[in-house]
Amino acid sequence: MRSNPGRLALGLVAAAVAGSVLVPVAYLVLRASELGFDGARALLMRPRTAELAGNTARLAATVTVAAGALGVGTAWLVTTRVGRGRSLLLALLAAPLAIPSYVAGFVWTRLFPGFEGFWAAVLILVLACYPLVLLPAAAAFAGLGRDHEDVARTLGLGPIAVFLRVTARRVWPACAGGSLLVALYTISDFGGPAVVRYEPFTVGIYNAYNGAYDRSTPAVYGCVLAVVAIVLAAAERGVRRDTPPAATVERSPARSGAVAAWAVSALVLLAGIAVPVAGLLREISESTRLGFTTLGGVLAWAWPDLRATLVLSVTAAAVIAVAALPVAVYTARPPGPGAGPIESLSSLGYALPGVTVALATVFVGIRLLPDWYLTTPLLIACYVILFLPVCLGPARQALDAIPPRVPDAARTLGASAVGTLARVRLPLAAPGIAAGAALACLSVAKELPATLMLAPVGTSTLATHMWSLNNDVAYGRAAVLGLLLVLVASVPTVALSMLLTREGRR
Image 1 (tube, rainbow, N blue to C red):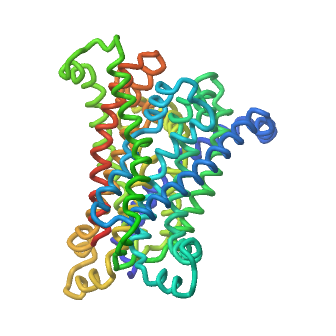
Image 2: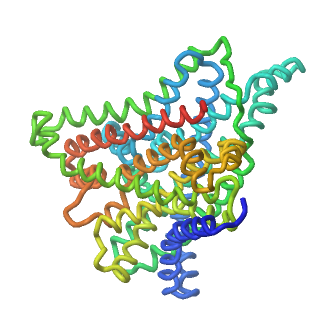
Image 3: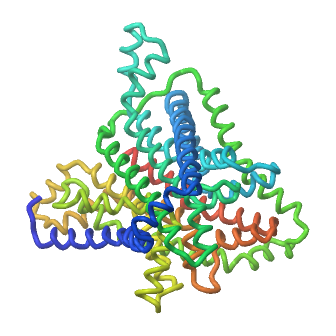
């Protein structure tokens, strides 16, 4: 596309949106520099830093491998062995996205005393993260067809050899991309490890922030985590660029193995959905200090938190979608000048821990925008930095999926670039854009550290109030809020599954 004033303006807006992600990075560098080179090096050489780094590396590696194996395995079983009910089963297997890791951790620790430490953190994070691998892997498996596998079998290869030498090689970009997202989520998660008393960098940063006036130490820790996150984010982009175009044929399932696929899926859903929900209900039924006995009493008590969660989630999702749109249009095919750096900056927010971004936003609010500190607009700005990538990805992919001949035909009929965008490209990409907004809404509803640090005085969400009740050992009331949070988060989860299914069938 030739350069024009409209394209230049779009690029400037996209660059401004992407540039906002530099705020937390600049804060980390500024705070860490207060220690000086020698001070920062001494801090990095402490046994405490090595302990946090080792905890983070072990957790990220183990969760990534386990969630990748679970996601790929269930995706392969469902797409290759299940015919009738495949879409329903995939939607059910994606449902654990609606359960925050800290809610799952709360339930497991209450059901099983002594459930804490490394393997406890691994379990709850694997169950929370495997849908990030499942969804892209299922799409890749579904689009492969069976021709290549049939040819391999005629050449004498067994089932395992066919999978490793034919199927896996063709779907690895999608699977690896999902696994890298799992790694990013794991190193940035705070609530899940904190509940089960495991201390990676995110928990160490939060404890250092709350335990001392010194802000340089958590900033140095944040810089280490940011460097790791940037490397992982760059790797994810590289894998995504290698992902082949979506196939136009749908894979027909095999005639055998459906029972095994449903059985494995049932076990996964038992651990990922049934146990957390049943545990919350049990905690509620056994509590003697709820203070209410009717559904009306529950809603009256929880309504301020529920209302704040809904308002913040919907408002933030709308703002994030609006912010992501110019970036998605500018970086989608055909990309504008400088689209690569803009895309890289925009993708950075998802890789940074919420604690780090919240610290940066606190610093900006106190130093530069004191009138905005602890206000809803500043909190939503923090959400935009954190969750811009989760909305940007589906929107850009939906725009890229539009065949070039469609907008070209509109241009030959006399439509302007703006008219083609408004009347052709955006309507066709609407399901992907809406899916991104739904995912952003889900992410905001579950976000914990940023909301804890930046929510206006007197405002609490379901997530933050549940966290405080859990710390106060008011487990029954915490379970009520946890169940409400799961119900609220299930709405955008269902919408996301429906929108992605519609997008995949286009």
